[in-house]
Amino acid sequence: MPGFRPPSGEPFVSEEDLEKGGFVLPGELVGTTEEFKPGSGATVIGGDIYSTATGNVFIDKKSRVVSVKPNTLTPNILKVGDIVYGKITDVRESGAMVEMGGIEGKENRQIVNSRPGDIHVSNVRDSYVKRLSDEFRPFDIVKARVIDVDRMRLTTSEDSLGVVKAYCSNCRGELVLEGKKLKCPVCNMTETRKISTEYGKGIQ
Ligand code: ZN
Image (cartoon, rainbow, N blue to C red; front, side, top):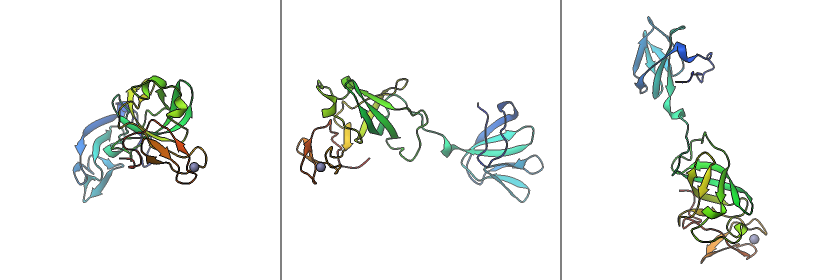
């Protein structure tokens, strides 16, 4: 268990001095003022200390402070198989770079082990890719699946994966799906992409 830095600015407590208690909900009794002082995520009501957060109880054995570390702060750790949303930042011959946005279904939580993703040219679609710039362009929003966490490799070969939002290379207008191509409603230019079947439906 790592050391715990309470969010309220209380001093850092080394892990040797910390005792981890059980999981509690707000309003649960976590101690009495005879034994402890309340820390973050805890409050005193009539001589007893109650949790104000959902999370685990931590007791600083030296200062006798009892705190509740909220579980909602538990970060998202990317793993193989996760579906992610991201923005294309660079398209080279061998692969496209993706700035990671969020994990599907958990968009409101920040990814912690986030590094730029890489869609190798062999992982774009299940057929041969001649030119990667026909599949992705910078600023495209893509939906992709994580296939290698260490090198943050992504694939878009499934039908539902690929570009979900794209902008015109000519005038930056938002492209709309017309048949199997994308068309700019502003300047009428058509472009190709590795288009997701969820193109234009918004981030799910
Ligand atoms: Zn345009």
